[in-house]
Amino acid sequence: MAVAFFSHMFFPNREHDISAVKNERNQVTENITNASQAIVQLTADFLQNNIDLPTFEASVKLQNITIGDLELQEQQLTEEFNKMDRRYRKLYFGFPSRRLLFYNIGLGIDFCILALLIINLSFKQKNTTKRLSYGLVGIIGLQIGVYFFVWILYDQQDLSYNIYMCIMVLIAGCAASLGYYLSKIKYEKISVLKSKNTFLQSALDSTFKILGKK
Image 1 (spheres, rainbow, N blue to C red):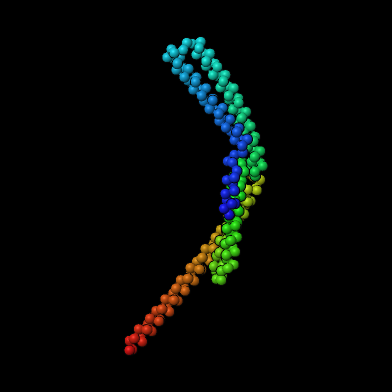
Image 2 (image 1 turned 30 degrees about the vertical axis):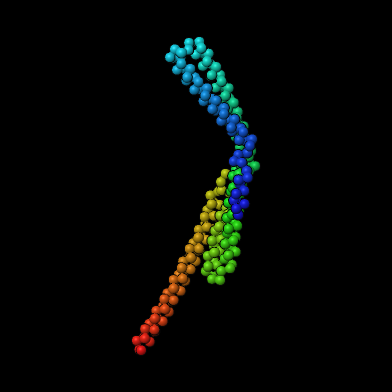
């Protein structure tokens, strides 16, 4: 179970090539910001008469050209990033990376394994009510695990409304049944305790009567 849950740790947050494009785009965005700040500084220097008008105009023109080139580069990198992101999402069932894909697969596997262990444990219960209660808990866990796999392999962004309704009805039905059997277990325990208390009370009464006769 631990191996399944932590299997995603063996993969990067993002694929290396798309991470490189993202980092390059971030650097270009930072350069645009720096160029814009440079224009602000040039304007302040000109207003304070630290530079003359020709120098100011030439420097601002150069920065504007630089910003234009950088914005074009940023747009190209954004298009490349989006194209690669779509390709990876198509490859990894809608997830942007293998890490997220295997993280969700691990959750589904863990839920299924845990549910099967609980179901197996239910067959070892001698009490029918307990056996049914353990079985229902296992079935609910198995439904959650199966939901993860259906959600992962579903070719759309999210499951349809009808599928969600079916899942909710199934889980609600199991939960209601589980609540009934848990209440039954509680009632049986209370009945056993009352029987024991009645027996002890009768034994004490009999003892006191015997002692009273002596």
